[in-house]
Length: 176
Image 1 (cartoon, rainbow, N blue to C red):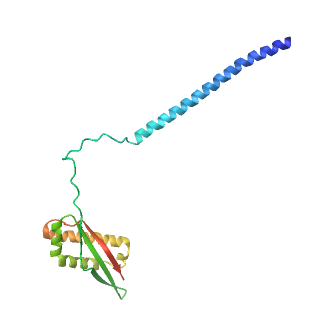
Image 2: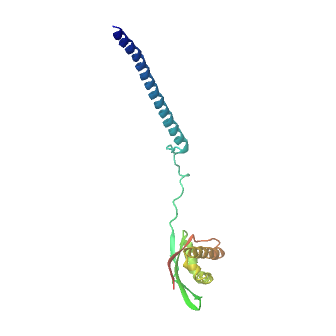
Image 3: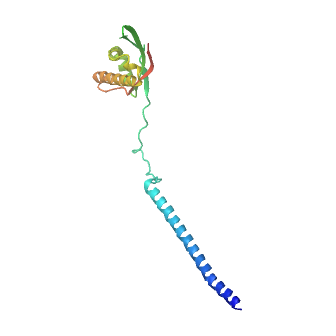
């Protein structure tokens, strides 16, 4: 009987331990879930401050606020192509370039046609002033394009009081 009493005493002692172990396990799970919830909340809060919210409420657009539609571009090709010769290490080299001018003002086209000889002369002198090797690089071609734009804008400013064109585009560029 003493053995039976000891066994029952041992069982009584183990039950509170098992109940206390389950409580600890539940408490540990609750703490872990709490940490996860705080982490997720902090992440969402940080993202909300880092990424600005899209304002879906727009002010009503009135006729005064609506920008006018852009004026369509007008392209005017300079014909015939510009041909410039270079002397490179005793050899004759040539550059042939077809240029197209972009404007948004139709009245500028008649001015370009009227002063085409002056524009072509300025472009031939400008292109001929560059070295052949420099014009073989992409950077050299871009610099030449910008220089041509500035020169034509300068000439048009002198003649009509405004730059007139927005872009000079090379539609053909051959070097040999």
